[in-house]
Image 1 (cartoon, one colour):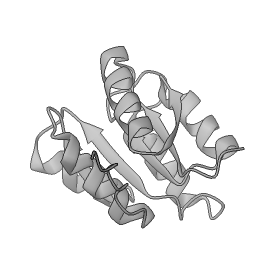
Image 2 (cartoon, helix red, strand yellow):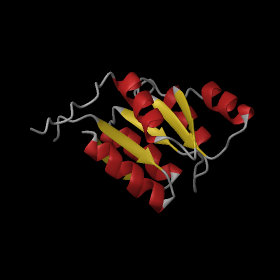
Image 3 (tube, helix red, strand yellow):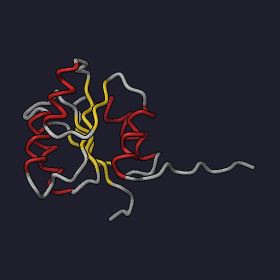
Image 4 (tube, helix red, strand yellow):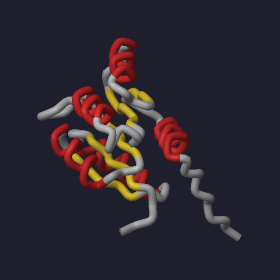
Length: 133
């Protein structure tokens, strides 16, 4: 088992999963992937991630449902959740926060914005860059 912080990335868009997953690994995180809401819920319960990045528009269970179920269960409610979505309306963010999300990032997104939320919520400092002589 890795001592790197574990992030569960739940998104049904393969290009997003590949891009975000690779960036998180480069930044020093272990990444677990789920491609639908039901698998995301199951992996949140079995993998015990340090943080969940959760899309809202997912097959099987949507992100609001997954977030609500996790936040209502005392075993998982301490896991920070970053909602990660193309839904850009203020009401979507408000509903996400009511479901218990800790942050809301709109797609298209800046990688640094997502990383800032992750570091703040996991208390993981930025990895120092190697100095080149």
